[in-house]
Length: 84
Image 1: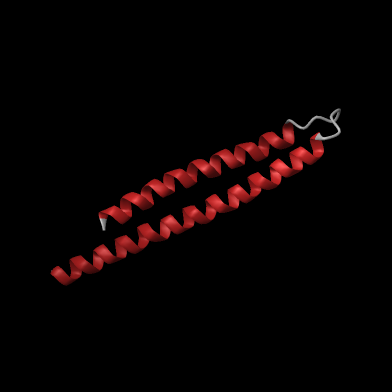
Image 2: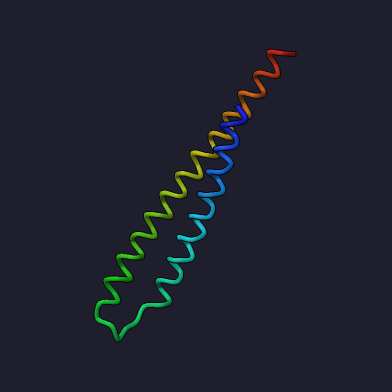
């Protein structure tokens, strides 16, 4: 069971970093667009869309890893009850 917790905890850390990076990129994309470059709006929109997808993907990964931790805790509790 500890392997599942280790993997889930690492996944939570990775997902948290992904969320932070995607969020920062979304904020930066809106503040760094250049009105003088005619390609900038398309590039910013494409980058923004990719970062929003990354944010959603990281959020789903975080939720999944949190459910693994919760399930492992429940199972550990049940095992302790059976052994008591």
